[in-house]
Amino acid sequence: MILWSIQPEKIFTLIQDSGVYRCDPVKARVSSMYPVQYDWLVSQMKKRVGPPPEGVSYPVWAYQRWQGERMRPDLRALRWYWGIRGEKLYRLELEIPDSQVLLSDFDAWIIILNEGLLADTEEEDDELYRIYDSLPPEAQKEMRADNWERVFDLTPVNTEWMIRGGTVQATFWELRKEYIREVTSFTSNSKYA
Image 1 (cartoon, rainbow, N blue to C red):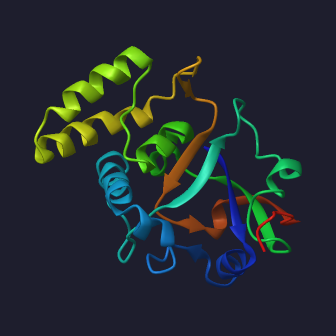
Image 2: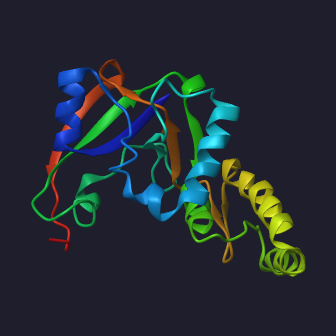
C-alpha cells in the first residue's frame, strides 16, 4: 500500500541512522491529551493488524488518500499549516504491506477525538444521542466504543451532514527505512512560531 507521512527532520534523521522509527509515547503529546481515543485505536490495531513489536505503545500515522483522491499531500497547501514556521519537514512516500496498515476516515477520527458519536444523518445523530444519554456511564462507554468502529467505513459520502472517505489516514506500528520510496523536503511557513 502506498502511503505518505509528514515527519520532522529529527525523525527523518533517526530513520536514516537507526533504520526504524517507533512512536515515543512520552513525546506523543496527543496520546496524553486523548488517552481514551488512542487506547481504543491501539486495541483496534491489535485486533485488526496484530500485536505491536516489543516496546511499541502507539502507532505511526500517515495518509492513504488526501482530500478525495488517492494522491500525495500537496506541499503547496501543507506548508502553510503543518509544523512550526521555519521548521524543515519531510513528506515520505512509503510502501507498506497492506496487512500491517489500518485505514480510517480522517473526518470521523476528529469526531472521535471530540468524544462524539458517528452518524450518517442528523436524524441518526439525534437518535444515537437520545439512546446514549439515557444509558448509565459504563453502557455509554460500550456504546461509544462500538459506534467508533464506523471510522473504518471508507465508503465515500459527501452530504451537508457527513463527509467520509475524502481523507483517509493510516496507522501502523513502525516506520522502517526500507518502506521509504521517495523523500521530499519542505520548510513550514505556518503561522505558528
